[in-house]
Length: 499
Image 1 (cartoon, rainbow, N blue to C red):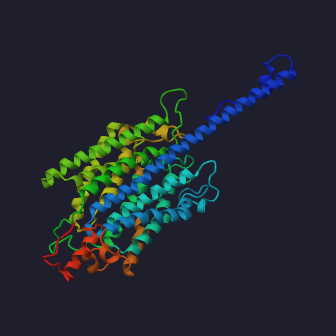
Image 2: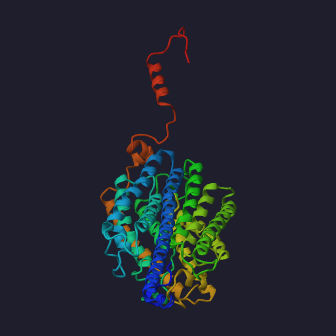
Image 3: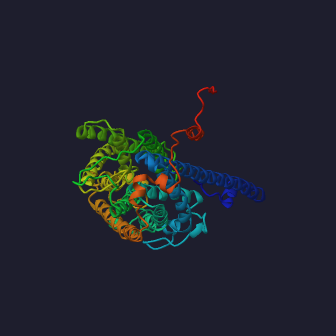
């Protein structure tokens, strides 16, 4: 936000024939205008940074949602283990993203493959990036790691969590985010000098960058580890190993829903941008529309899953509905800013069908994912990437991605097939990159006996065998000690009991 430049020489000519007084008056007035202009600029920076920080806090709150969702989706004997892995996703991810990840992702100027500046936040802030950008992007990075942890829950060694989480947040995920989100990235929609197919990839908040990366990584981990003991019988028939707390699942889902309003609308990074100065419509309106499309996609997916699973199983299952809701959110994340609200309903409806279909396929293939993370984030994320290429509206694309008038938009909206081609490439390269990096990592960990726990530990539960005790105290410790003492020295029947 800036005012027209005030030139004292021009202003002096308008103030009268007395050159000395006119020059002094002109300088005074221009200095006042400059001071006001600077205040407006300072205010704009402050508002935009505050908005981005608030969005970062919302996205970080999703870690609590992941923790509750994961805890409720596993059996009680593994609760402490899965909660600890969620804490360490954030902690280890914070250090590695600070040291390497942010630089690999956004270290411009760089090449199209990987960033090469801002290691350890050196030279931050600058004109393009502030500390708030790091915090926001770190919250995204640890979300990808949290997705993967759900796929390999209840059977993975603790050291393996540390290794894969650090590698994913420090290298694998940042490279992908550089490709599609950095202005230097080879497929970024903001790289106006070198746009893929003249459009670049419109993955606004990360159906591909975040959800597919986390989902595909989890897919490889679960495939290499194999299913949990008892998940399939000797004939290959699936046996349900239900999580121990639907309450925690619902609590985690609502926390994730809340955080998604930072995940999607917050990806604008700025709120104080007018598309047509002086009018009521600006980026603040686009942010509101993004929140609406996010909401509608999730709600539609939840209801579709509710009735779809009822038709298939005969039950109204709250856990399935929660996963369907999250599948709708994962799908709309790519195109939330560039589609109409009615299109978000289409997105959520198809996302639910994609999730149900991939879950059926997983059972047929004897693939075990306790949180359906690969199916939900990988499958619905891929659908979201394709959906954006079909339904992106020209007006919204030009507003959200300015600087390249006439760029292609959604196929079904009359924009041709170039955007669809770019998005098909995105899906393929994400699958290829994550498979080429995370697949060998899990394979090596498995060969080194560092990936899966022993059968004895798995049957007993990792809380007891690896973490010193269960997450839940089923009886008071003092009562247990008193009970054991009574077994050793029974009270006489004549001794009165006091309370």
